[in-house]
Image (tube, rainbow, N blue to C red; front, side, top):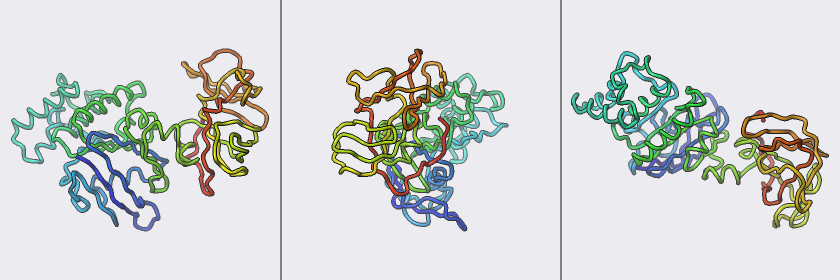
Length: 353
């Protein structure tokens, strides 16, 4: 069952904020993660799908049916919230069975289905426990089971992992993805955690000022961002402004950088993107794009170290697993991407390296 937004617009009364010209389709079995800076419209987008807000213009279509003006309960969607919203005085079984109760499913049948769903999420032994006696991860799985028990037409995830310990999140990512694929339903995942989005999603939707600025696979979003602002927002990045030189170079404050052949006219303003992991330590075998450097900042992160290398004309952010002293770096031409410069292209959000 698919989810489709067609020309959806919504503006909050008395403010210019909202979502504008949203066109997005989520296929059955597909998980689309939506990311963006605070205030970019991620939660508003989810509200449009869920029926918590109605669009000023456009359509919301679920399983081929126009549900734009239907209330949330009529849309048959499973929703997992950031705080799980479990009933504290109900057991795990009763929490999971509650959506079936409001749909007037007979008691024996709803309890049977609730226990089956709890078993599916690995909580059969906790069926009679109350939420307050469960860990955060267990509560999250109860909330997920409750969202799936009535076989929803789609699944909406609103920051479902943000309250969990960092060590537990990867396990829960895999669990959500497994269950969503097992049920074969479309899922929209709203998150501020980029690693979570990139690791879970079939496609990532990046929002800026209420608009979708790029919708693509995680690999494409990271390796081939459509704009400078997306490149700056997703992951760590070296971004330098320069001018194209000939058919295989760009002039930067760092100096002349060689890159694969391109067809940009000489003097065209461009932005150069180099991800930190694509900066290599040591001399270049062919001497291309090699720089002597001085490390001014060195952060040990366990399996890798992230460093700032000062070279003539600027600083390069790099990542490496090497432990040796870094005195030279080089940037292979194939590790460089050109992004056409835009007049109003600014980072989506300030981030610390």
